[in-house]
Length: 173
Image (cartoon, rainbow, N blue to C red):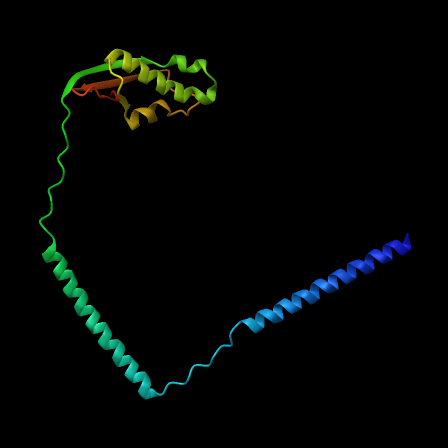
């Protein structure tokens, strides 16, 4: 057994040496592939002054042209259009309902909030006689205020129906 253990150790040592040798070779190849850094020529004071003058003239021209471009943009812009007027809905029917949502508690806890919202929508579809029902964000938040596991058991809402049949529902005060 001692011979087997020493043979394993020898093989392990050989493998480690091969790996380290390969890593060294890869490192040498990478160094050869990378280009040598060149040393920048030293600049004399005269060259530095000339380059600075060139940069100043470029900046001056750029600033003037930028100002000219802004002026042209202002001239080219047509008169601003007036803000879009909100379309006023022609309300045909407005009602206030106290909607029971107790049946939402007949499903598993994790689905109660969704069930409460569906109950509210079906109630409004039935009573407002329209398939197009929209709930306000504040109403949805109020139903789920205690979390989706414990929604409200009843809610008081104001439903308005317009000429197109759209029913918008919001939380009643």
